Length: 152
Image (tube, rainbow, N blue to C red; front, top):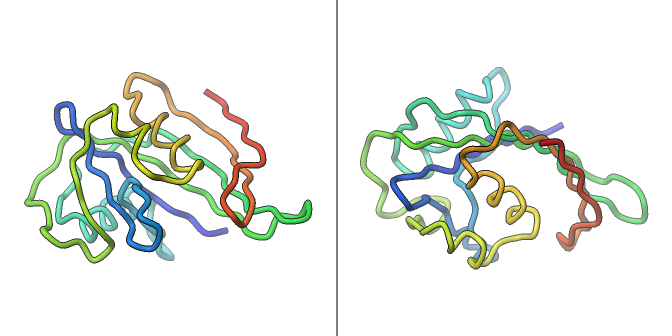
């Protein structure tokens, strides 16, 4: 099972998002956990590689099992570890190798183009007061949510 770690960074009333060039969808910066790496090491490394910023004390806020299902069968499955942070050091990259970086206000999180799956996760991450959320999202190869279940 592939593991992914991402982080939604907040600075005052703005959130740092990454616009992926393939579909023009906005996501929280992050990426694959490498072999032998902890999820904390992965989120800090991936975030730095994509943004140029060093996260300070990111907090694990959500764990989501994601499955692609076709014809009633699971074709792909991975686990996403979602972090939040509000402290960082460094200078934001002018040109990220992964896409366009932009600070966005809270209300933009529900209106920016993104997948249904990422919208569910971003909306939960933006609620900094909530406890750890755990969920399972099953979606089609076209990225339409077929089912979801949340524990929070």
